[in-house]
Image 1 (tube, rainbow, N blue to C red):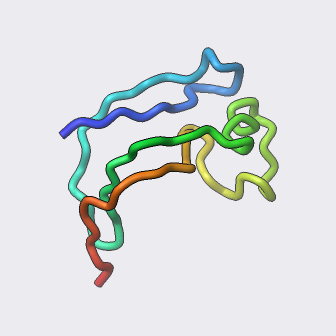
Image 2: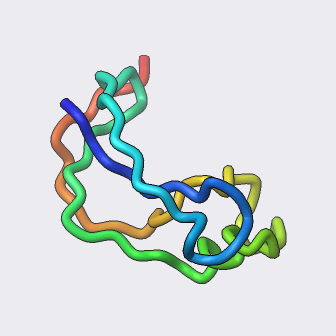
Length: 81
């Protein structure tokens, strides 16, 4: 099964956003599959894209993925051992 995600290819304006299609890997223990119905870009996403997001706001997360706020349905949950 394939899925699409939007990534920030480098720091800059909206033109650095790219849609990537990838193969969906099977979840492993402690992970879930979520069918996403809606997602939004947050202030932290915008600041990360511009390269100006302080650790206090963005934490230590990678800056290449956007849309961490979402609404969806759990499809599969695997319990951690």
